[in-house]
Length: 219
Image (cartoon, rainbow, N blue to C red; front, side, top):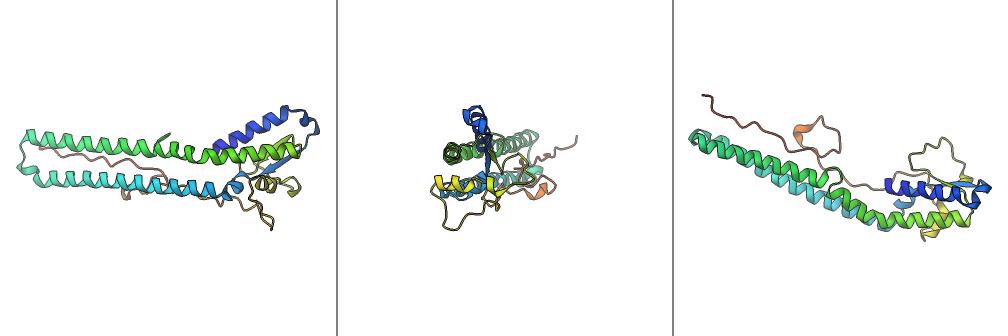
């Protein structure tokens, strides 16, 4: 969505520099509402949800393996030599690092989920951008704002709402006029589940694997 807002901002600047800017005619669209009407966007969101859930399951399996390693070590600790203990401790530490690295690779900043989201939603965003550009040219608009963007619009006169025209360009207009005021209904990727031991963490934030302190025998 940020990429689309950026594109719409670029479009606004381009139109401002055009000769039609002298007319000072403007309008706004609700890009979030438009994308929520597009089957391709819904399909992309569904695929992202599936991928996210599958990756989260992989991480949970790795965490279960780590727990099993730790429990086995604690059960056999009294029977191990110091050398064996050190080896097992190193194996547990290495496993913890691997789980944490994999989690960051998938759900971290610019991780696999982020890249996949860009890959799947970019074509949809491009379609919306092209439709907005066509509407701007047909209606001779100097400025088009995005109602669902970062720009705060305290009041919007429906006479300047061109969302329906964008939907028409995309072949999504309905017999009964759509209601772009119902923005925010688009589906988003479900965030990974927060581990039980991280109840105070920010909701929706992927959590790293818990770090354990492997006990060592006191001299």
